[in-house]
Image 1 (cartoon, rainbow, N blue to C red):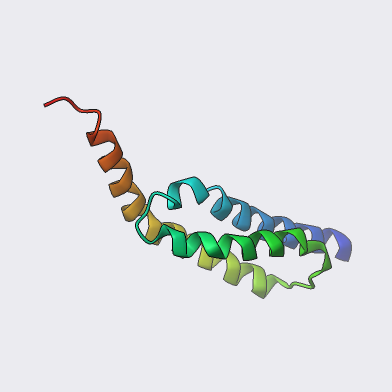
Image 2 (image 1 turned 120 degrees about the vertical axis):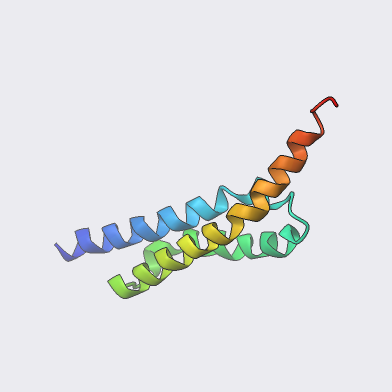
Length: 92
């Protein structure tokens, strides 16, 4: 049972990290996106070593909360970048 619990926790963290990593192309379009992109190397490294890291429920909850907050904070800047991109194609 403990092995299943560990797999579940790892899957939850992996899901958070994958969600953030999927934003890489969008973040590259932000003015300060390059600062965040540098951190993606660390996330990718962590993701690759997940099977060797001992985690507990509290760690996972904190990572899930941080991921949720990160996504919420990016919502407006990414929407503005997308709006600016779309405006290029609107004929006035």
